[in-house]
Image 1 (cartoon, helix red, strand yellow):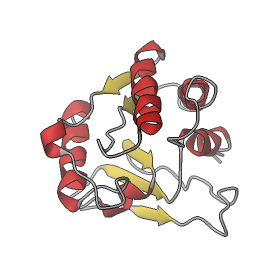
Image 2 (cartoon, one colour):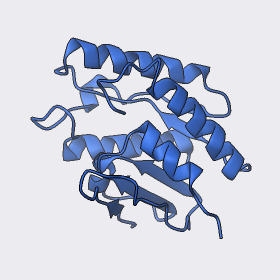
Image 3 (tube, one colour):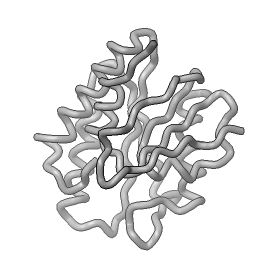
Length: 168
């Protein structure tokens, strides 16, 4: 089974990140929550970028050489970045099938954070060239005490949920 490749943030900067060679048919790119994935299918590549958000992942894809900040207003930040991410990904990998995972989040976040993440999730249906992976059912989702990072059970449940959607 594959283990995640972990990219740490260097001195609060994400500018040194680069996508490694993509070696598998299915690639998951995300934040530090992906670092805890276990029991990954053999034909997947897991890339975990500590502190990543939609904009930094878009930048990774944009800068790929083949040879969500929860507090931001999603209408002016995350939604355009998500659309640009999918568009750029489709341009860089034209034969790919792209899925965008809805963002599960803790009910214990503040009202603004929950509203922003709900708005962002709702906007995903307007993005062309990708399918949307529904959120994990609430009864299977929980976070650590920081209300951000997933519990090990949630991590495994989300991977199973994604794999089922992708039919990996």
